[in-house]
Image (tube, rainbow, N blue to C red):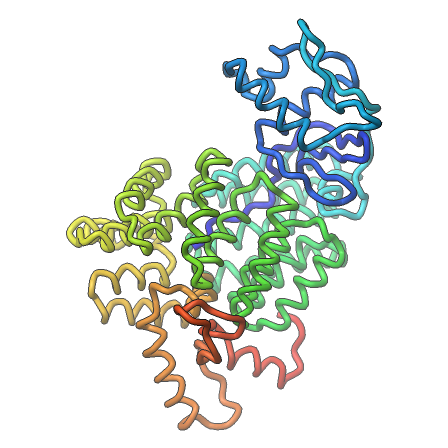
Length: 491
């Protein structure tokens, strides 16, 4: 269920600054000795305004304007914000890092110095040695990527390609095109197999320029495992990307997305949580953590995580979309419907978003309203929701035949969300049917014959239906084993 992934930073403005053992990176947030320190967007903006003064006093008005983006704040809110900064930063030799200058404002009491990013990092490669016009075009393309509509994603591809032409050997631009194509596959704006092919072509253009381009390796690995069902080679690319740039959060997200194909929900959760630490302001890793908890049978934890993340990040649609589904499954249908309608209104009918509303309505027993949403999918030309989520809605509506058809199409058309089908509790009835069919296929198929991607049988479960590693898992068995027999290691 997790939504669009883009590689644009949370907010990319200003230099990287170090002070008292801390590092403040506008793209990645605050860290100490390499460990991320969690602060909200508001406190990070406020801290940035204090650090920019390099020890001079920032007035209360300046701090408020930065932290609240020009809005007003009460005395208690400002005091609370400063308290949170002090709690995160502590003291140096008995002196608070953030000091109140009574009657004026606040200042940092330690030396602040500007540092250069790692020249080999993914972020640095978008800037270092790049033609200024190419970089400006690259940044503009990121803005279109962040909007994630079908037209905006195509515009982003065109701009990234133009940046690549201006930059000559601009590997980062080609890798960004691969990420755009992955977005299109995830949201089904382009058929996943076609989008995956385009993503691999762009990633390999980047790797021809820079064999150490972690972003390109990560994109190729995701397509290899999720779209082409060659899980082990895909993980190999992703692990190499992480080894090249351990701070590249999107590689962690891609790996967390793929690991459920092997039933490795525990490891996937750990990877998604690392992505949250690396980029604490981005909603995609948070939504993925919630979804993986849900698919692991931990619905209560999923709800708690998604609700707190939605509150903290000002209700981003990526998180709300997942929260609507999990709330509906948990029986909180009024909450789920309200959230689904807010998402639908904000996105002006994004097909992958309306499945959450349709599922919540069906779960609440309002089949007529749910079917009206379903009819929207059929009327929408050129786009429809991910097929596994369509299958869940049809099951809830009692349309077993249409659910089974959506399930089969999800397998045959390489729906990216089918990776999670082994854990999604809404699809349990379809999994039971698939297990029976899988047994029949094994007894009748020829040795070595490749079959379509399918679910592996459960190997063990915990009490009360929660999943353990290796249990009720999505596994692209035939395609992956076929690749291993043939000795393939790349898509």
